[in-house]
Image 1: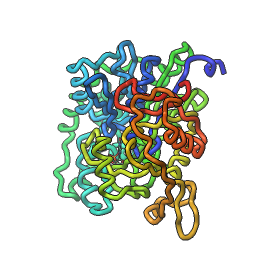
Image 2: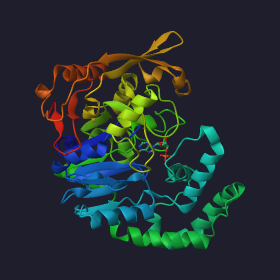
Image 3: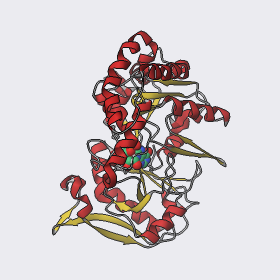
Image 4: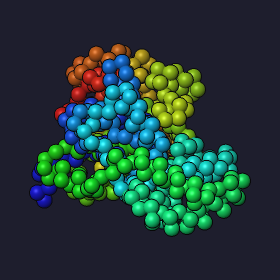
Length: 433
Ligand code: IMP
């Protein structure tokens, strides 16, 4: 019990399909925080931070890396491509943004292996029109091999005697599948050489303590810990729009495994949503806008994938979906981002769906495979005009206040803040956080 009184652990999660602007909010809270932990996913994520005139995109490293004295950890359920990690760290250092005191990689995290990229590519191609539209970062096959008990973890890089026996076992299962798709497959020598390079890359970041030990001690000592989710709730392997999802847990519950803590250790769960919705890759998208409107918002909001550069599909905010995300995450507060993008146009929000003559108010009341058959029902709000100079709720025009209150009262979670521009300080603070 004493652990609950001290320190503070905050989980920050995207509550749509990813790209909600979490990096931006992690960065905002950053100055108060000492420990930053990424928990799952890999280089499929892209967290954009704007500092002055500079823009940085982190993929694997927690967004707190820019804060001097911070400790940044890549958590237990992450899947890490050693080469992507190496280039990201090199770029951060070269551009002067690698300011953390310590960067550590969990020994329990899995490596994205060369054959994971091949498997993803050939399988996506084989699915044709039903392709998931993955990011091509080897994520799905890495999680799949982990679940098949054929994964390679960071801790294995300390034991090449073990790997010498383990790698042939893995290749015995992988090579036949690769050859089925016309790929050459790998020799144990090729994979062991890849792993030797990976060991050199990770060596400076091996940890003497586990992520779990570090987070526990931080909390007991009274430090603040920010657990940074990746992707978004509707891409969660269990709760998302299956099978058009990623392969990890992207909801707050995943933080327990990713950071090695019990649920009672978490003090706050903050959700992040845009004032509209975006989605990349395949799968149903109920509130997608007509093409011209979509193109307009994509341009103003710069809605292109931070990792892949793919244009994002754009839709109206969906309260049916947000209510679901608020519940499965157990949100204690939420932020709205990119409100400024919609300032000069009427804003629609989807309040519920119609399906076979029934009203659907919650995602859980419709099966994922039927979502593309629902008809969204909208409520429309007048344009609220330029809000980029607003910093408090009272500064906002009445229409904007009404819109934000409508969202808050529907999802029944306190609104904490609204971002009204790209810069660190361009935020309307609604409540203390
Ligand atoms: P994967 O994670 O690369 O396997 O991709 C599975 C699905 O999740 C695809 O639809 C991707 O576009 C989507 N996805 C994965 N990571 C992100 C992200 O960080 N932002 C948005 N979509 C993502």
